[in-house]
Image (cartoon, rainbow, N blue to C red; front, side):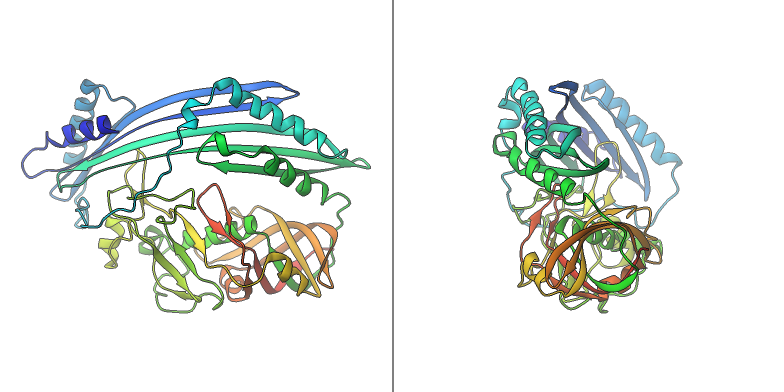
Length: 446
């Protein structure tokens, strides 16, 4: 890590008078193993390194990057960034971030087992995952994919404004897509487990989840159209929350592409829903000490009991909108800073998902959604998605359902949330999500 800091600070030391200069230096590794029929179907192992440089002169920004840390390449990249700045249009809001004086919360998200685990053991995990899944239930007829993957990343950021920070993290993941067959009908179910390193991965967690999801949908029928109450499993709830948080992106807001622009202080969701982007929570796989511009991360309250409290901002969108940054700059060395969440966490409610189900006389437990991202208009909030799941009758799981559609607006869905589950599930993208119960949902079927 100290080498990356040295490189970044070395670039900044070459700044010309009157020039703002920023260097983002990163390196990382990745491994992926896919198994099929007890053998390795594919194996990839890669290392990457690169530098991204931003130069700002008189509010004109020039950006350049290179996939190398060779000193000559870095010098050429700096020259290219300066040249690009000369031809850029001035933007009065364009400046580099300045030190914010905050004290970053340190996170221990580096697991040495990513590097120390032998490659043969990683390969065996993918093979074992497939074997265990096939043997878990006689209805499992095959495996579409069985995957082990891991990664490590480190970066350093330095600028002429006085910022010099670094961050690192690792991750490991197993996933399996199981096929369940009964009477010539086949259903698919996915399962996964994720940790900061392979040493803590539990293959049985992925196996159990995949088998349950595949087999529980066998014999599914199309439901009759009706208005009812649904329960979204945590994975499905996280997908909905992800769409909503995307609408709270400061870039979309200043471009007029969010249905919630100019709604700060308004109630946009049910009072039972509160959302916080909290990269200081070490339970989240998205936890980080600083953002992509070196700003100190802290919790950002997005929704408080349904009331819109904040948008996500980097320094540019925060300056342009007047709200200031929320330390939500996201980037890689090949891109300029964007805006995105780190670790969106739902405030848990008081009832478990099973208790929510038990309270519903007639409804649907949604276990799968299709076409969510393509089916949502991010400007108007209109959406139409296909769903599968289990009928709920008298508080009990009942027959499986397929080929149903939910069509509404994101605004109405948020307003109709009647309860939040008490159990958070930590998902690979960093979200901490619980089940959501939504009333008065229009379900289209037969």
